[in-house]
Image (tube, rainbow, N blue to C red; front, side):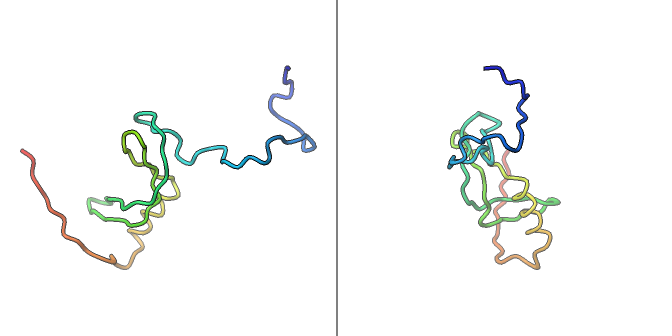
Length: 102
């Protein structure tokens, strides 16, 4: 069948598959490094801003099931930066070991 509408339909056109349960787009897509499946989970994330290291708790993170690479949505990235720049102070401070590799 030839579609002469170029993918554009009137408001009265019948819409099919309206009972679809899964989202049309995945929030992260596939891994840009290895092509593996990226699944969202909540993690503790090491975050650096202006050379300062912060540990952020409860961050929604896309994690590649094949290589482990982490991905963040734009909204999550903005929330991470806001959490660091707008927070009155950390809920906890932990010492971090620094080790030199020859």
